[in-house]
Image (cartoon, rainbow, N blue to C red; front, side):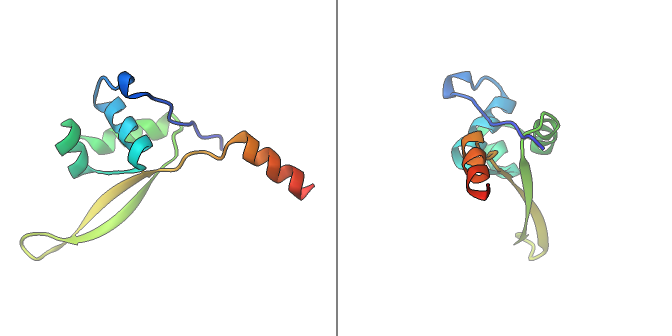
Length: 97
């Protein structure tokens, strides 16, 4: 599958979607709490769903945490996996003959 590369500059950040894209490009991962705190994005899972539909390779990393009541909860951390560049693929093809 050919995944898209996130290509965005800080000047292009104009809404919650582009803020999340910038964050993923800059820091590679984001949680719902970071999205709320940093960008006011309360529906991170919807933004991630749409980015995946647009063919960006974003995986979910489950994290178990203990909340303030002592219960174990699951928190999703989303990670952007950039596609392998064509030049890297071409070099590997040349090596493998």
